[in-house]
Image (cartoon, rainbow over all chains, first blue to last red; front, side):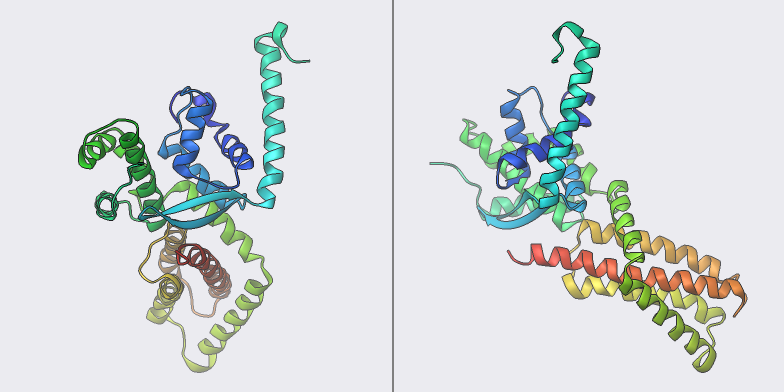
Length: 112
Length: 208
């Protein structure tokens, strides 16, 4: 991952969130989507992305589909039913975490 | 018109990564697609240099990061994941039944057909690991997949330790039977886990 260690702990949730919004995505597409949404602020490297995807796949949160595209094989990832439920849990956990951090760091700006 | 890499250029990336010790096919397939997508993107966003120059630049910046994933035969994170799958399988009814049958067949062989002493006892775990490895080979041929490879390393470690330990056992002692029980469970759960992992890859990778 490009810039901060703080993002590292949220990488799996970021991946799950992106896959929740799309039917299926491949690795490079995920890195570009994150770069686009964050306007280049967050850049996910191959060394961080693929191990995270493989872990989520092994946990049964993602399923894969192989397709021949432009002279090569492309591995698409999509959420399983278990993955969809887990995404909702992790997103609410992350929101709770952000709220707590805001109350600590900037009490005046915290969301009530 | 959007620029796309030719089959030869894709093959070049694949060969380069193979020569960079990216052992496992599943990891290499993803990296080939990643590198190819990045090069195509640069070509389509105004980089007029030829494929080899862009490729060289990209690899200088990212090679170390890529090698981290695939250059080692094992990966702690994957070992942990396959280790958990294996432990979960140890409680599966098929494994419990299979281990029970395997244990009693081995004991029957030991008592009535051929005594598993000394050399025979040491050869025994080696034979078992070869049987488990042959499951992966029969299902996926020479293709190497990361989870299968890491699981192989995990089991190999167990059987190698077992070979060292087994030579100190007294034939038909209590510890001999304890060891036989553990070996039976490991063997049968190992066969099931290897079958599940190999079949998982076969279903996904052989359809393209």
